[in-house]
Length: 357
Ligand code: NAD
Ligand code: DAU
Image 1 (cartoon, rainbow, N blue to C red):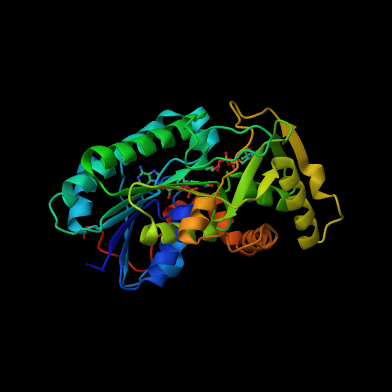
Image 2: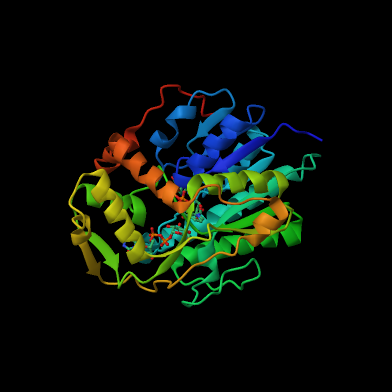
């Protein structure tokens, strides 16, 4: 069997993608990692400066919505495996501007599936894989009880974001059943950690607490999310890439449910300690605002299949992970500042790769 893999990771300049790219580039010098990213507002090359220039890494600024370019990329780079993370990922933006979500998340995924199918039909290699990185939001919302999403939970997406991810997952399974494209899908809960765009709850609130800005809590802050450290998600993706079964779905989560308000209180209290503030000072920044439209009440993932079949478990306790996360944002002010003033979009790599391959 051919063990050299040419892996196309889409969305590798984003939050989770940058952790996956870093892990695979460092762990598998024998593979070549192609990081394909359009560098939308969420793409940030400062997320991956540490691997720039490595021999087994190439960055490609390209858009998954361009079918011919995807065909050309997969063929020219002789891609054997695809880990597909590129997406519009923020629920609030999907409410204010839904159509871009349908374009990128649905049509972009269809383009990649079709381009992979066309190229892989022409090669004799047996171990191809199209890995769709998806979200627990496709399952809809849970009540405040002990239920959890399993791999058999019916899809019931509620936001334009989750509906677009659900559509993409359906397309992936359609290419599997109809064309025998080797696919795998994973659905993960809320990630937290370094390099997350500061529109999402945790990095936004760390930034606002630090700068004494209001903390806009949607509704009463009663919604529940199941938080997983992003490096544990990246490890899960590595595990599924190598040991996942074709055609299967894997749920990934932290067994770590928090109401938003409890999580925000924790952030405020930890930040008070780290910033030498009076106990309770940061909590005074909390401001309850109009709820998100269609706000899903609760997510919780049953990740027992990952443990049972692939021996994966989160490695980090939340108490450790959240401290590491706060410390990272406090110690990397320039990273945050570059986003706030927009200069991250002018990043120019110190090592210029030949982008035309
Ligand atoms: P992100 O918004 O931080 O990054 C998305 C990346 O995709 C960016 O680098 C962006 O430039 C790129 N991109 C967007 N449109 C593109 C296009 N048309 N062509 C090429 N690249 C494009 O997102 P994230 O939070 O890192 O999420 C990554 C993936 O994981 C998404 O598919 C998301 O649905 C999924 N997911 C996220 C979470 C989470 O908690 N963040 C949880 C489960 C699953
Ligand atoms: O569950 C996985 C999903 O988690 C991913 O698929 C999405 O890409 C990712 O963005 C995330 O979605 P959420 O909507 O859960 O994440 P967000 O950080 O936007 O919000 C977390 C919770 O906090 C949610 O209940 C809304 C609330 N919230 C969020 C913001 C930004 C607030 O109360 N105030 C805020 O300002």
